[in-house]
Every structure is written in C-alpha cells, then in structure tokens.
Length: 180
Image (tube, helix red, strand yellow):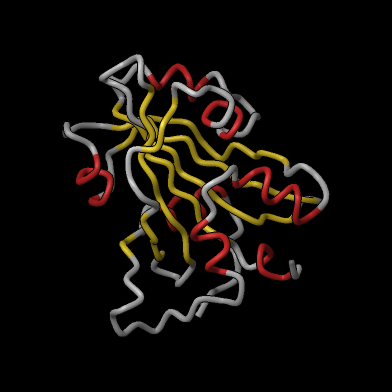
C-alpha cells in the first residue's frame, strides 16, 4: 500500500534512503498501482514523459545537494567505499509532487561538478542530450519502506573511467492519478 507523500524535504530524503530491491516474485504487501509498469520500464527521459502526460514541463525542486554516507544498495553499485555526493529533487506539476529522485556519485568523482552545475534543471538535460552518457545496466525496481515504488540505473560518462551516477527515481501517488 502506498502512503501519502511526506511534508518536508528531510522526510522525502529520509524515505529515499530506505530504498531496497523490489522483486515481484517474492511475497510482499506492496501491490503496484495501475500504470506502475509504464514508469518502472520507461527508458526515455522521465522528465519528458511527465511533461507529455501532464501537458507541461515539470518543475525541479532541489531538496538538497550534499556529501553523505551511501546506503547499502549504493555501496553495492559503486566499486569504492566512502562518502557520496547526493542530489535530492522533487518533480512537480502545479506545485504537486509527482516524483522524487536521488542521484549519487562518489564524493571524489568528477561527476560531482556536473550535478552541482544542474541547479534547477532536470538531470535528463545532461543524460539524454550528451551521447557520452550511457546506461551501464538494466533498470532495477526499488521499493521504499512506505511502499512507494521506484527504480535505479547506473550511468557513466564514456570519456572518464572514474565516472558514475546512480539515478534513483520514486513515483509519488499523484503520478498515477491522471490516466494515459
């Protein structure tokens, strides 16, 4: 069951840090809402897909950009231990949060400057406009402690072997309210 979105940036960030792998084959109390498969399997820009569905470009609200300790799943995805730089955002339409995202890279990575340089722009502007950025693996379904679904994918910049952005996206209830 999906709970109501949280109220403060700290609540959103704390919730995103609870992400765990989601396996539909295992017995779980989480029942994906109608339309979840579309969002879980989307391989194009999430920002553009939301814009298409809601007929306007979503606003990016940056919740935080800071160095912090990685979560357990993030430690598994990166080859090096240590702190990560994390960017937390909400995508909103008409001030209604539709998606929250956490993008992390090792704090020593050259990708930190790319994340900091985005400001209020969506990460999709970087990943989908520069062919040097490539997905490194399949989309991985995630579930939060409150039952919200999401997914993650690792991206690397082909010109830099030290590159690596783990993009984690989580779907808030408002995303499912408008039919396709």
